[in-house]
Length: 605
Image (tube, rainbow, N blue to C red):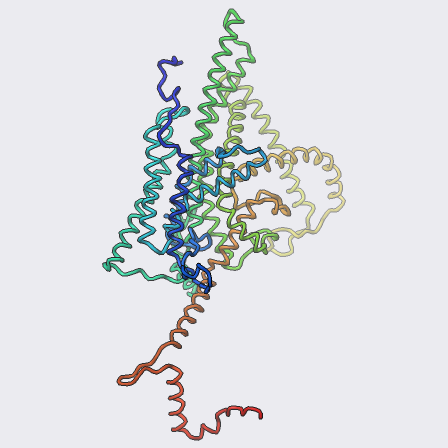
């Protein structure tokens, strides 16, 4: 071991930078509120009411700024996703419950976490508000300045204290490089917005037209539905068949993109934090082993270790090795879940668009509207929490399985007990094979002797009609006692399979792990289904196209009714006057139509 004087400086000294990030988070609320107020003043209310108070001086200013449309936004999806990624460090800080601005009792910790979540949301609100604001020139300037401030402060903290007490060199960089990358992307995005807005303001570029509620991919989806199905199927590659096939008529909303990006970054930070904790615990265990060996050497003159101490040292060594090895498969499992969530979202939402609800349990086919709205707000946060907790649980279970494999297969070979290990393994495999074989034999006997023949040659199986009843009842009687013993193993296998599947799919929020009839107890699956229904009702391409046609037709009728017809050398006349003139001209040319006209009722005397 290194002496205290020869250790690197980052091991003993606690680096204190010139910027306190927690204090900066508190003070960042001031410019955040200023930016929100300015954008709110520029935003105009759609429905303005005349008031007799001082608010009438503002006319229709000071509208609510919308940071992000969580229901059906398909524009700037990756910009919103990167903006969510910039909040990953603060979310992990809240996840570790390290936010304690005020000393409060334990029962009030929930309120403290609520205040912390609101503060983090308010501090990062300008990122989203500046991206979604229609005043591009002003919002791009504010967004660039605010992002630059966060980037400079974070970079200053990393440059002043790049090392840490757990991983040593560049530990702080490992924690903050995703946030710096996201902030750099936002700087480039706001700079691009500023350049385009400035060109529009100077007249060098036309103002982009505001598109309606119907997106291009939604219109393309409706067009595909109206076309005749093509009998020929396109040849798909191995990647499209086995993994994913891109659909040009389907776009993921900004909420899903932001959730996945933030989940990736939070999962990376969680793995780094877990590895830091492992390094810390490993150091403590190494010190414990050294002290244990010193103690045993002082007690025993020969210096030999007792078998119990050897077993303890072996267990510690195996546990440390298995924990490191299982980091990769556990992280790969959760990363594959994140991609699989996108695939399942597209599959489920397209089935709902087609009117198919049979893939959902019966209790979720007609959800409550209020519960669905709340589920939409819960989903993103719960998805990230499920992924983090799922990684930890999967990692623990895989480590336990790895320790079991080491003690049952690897260590006996290392201790020259290979023959005993193979003998025990062979006996176990043979026992399981005999049990499974007897179960298969029962099915074969029942199919061969106790069922009547097929009704027709095209039938796939025999009808459920008993044959040889006396032999069948004797068969059931003698196997009754054996099946009691077989049921003990089946019950344990059921419990084992339930535990394995439950822990393996704990991070899968799109699949319930509850048995049939108890799906309501799975709050994560309830949030998933509620979110699906909200997206289905608000982003269904057929429904959106229908509403788009109605709104466009209404606007067109209003424009036609408000058009004024102007003739050369004649004053402008309204549409009503023009209609009356045509009516008079028609009646002069066709005097018989006068008798067919509906007469105006005379007022009662």
